Length: 103
Image (cartoon, rainbow, N blue to C red; front, side, top):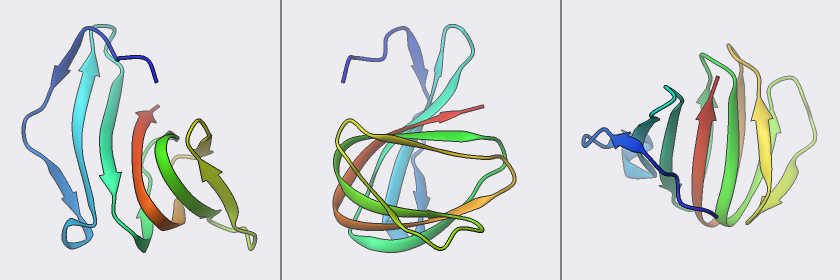
């Protein structure tokens, strides 16, 4: 992955699910909001407010979007999109490093 340049980093960590997911919010000079983080091995359910694209940097996971029955596998270099006002289940087998792009 290429470095994300010209960003402001919000120093307070976003900690979810008793520390199984930890991220930091960043904002680009163009006003794009993203989070950069890790998810430890676990199965979690996330809700979305705005549309999100999850970019997998390292690790492996399976994802099931709301309303779908099938799980899909993702690894380093893959990404998946989730509509706004929705949710997804994620099962992480190896610690997952990710960038979440909002909007």
